[in-house]
Image (cartoon, rainbow, N blue to C red; front, side, top):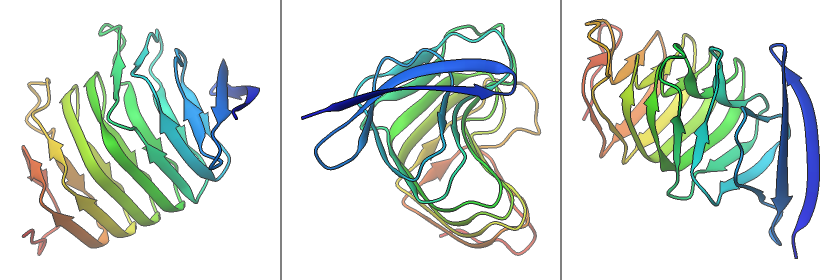
Length: 195
């Protein structure tokens, strides 16, 4: 049985409406969202369709604004339809959050950064992700974040000709584990080692 609920919220001055439903396990099922999606409640979220966003403003397509979230893209793709809109971010985890898991999907054709982990985040897992064709960096992990695990990910080359864009950019972070992953371009603090 699926329970339906409509949610209305305001985000950076832009009003967003989306319809979601929960499956028997209590996972929020996401499909056919054509506006930015904002996660404000802890829990599990799962895509059942590709999400292509038509946005005319620089924004974040999926914004996680609470701790204790599992976002399962379920093999689906997040992309941007209007390449003339610059600086659009695929997924953004707000500052100071913990226990976030992002997994099993693709982010491509985004004019900004594919995935941003905010400052002071703790216990973040990124698994089985492909991030390609971004206009900026593939993944940015901002300062003072701690205990980050990246496993089985591929981050390809940026579409930008800017030489300061990287597959992954680590900015003064601690306890980052990267395994079975490939990045085109790495920028990390002195002393960083990957294996």
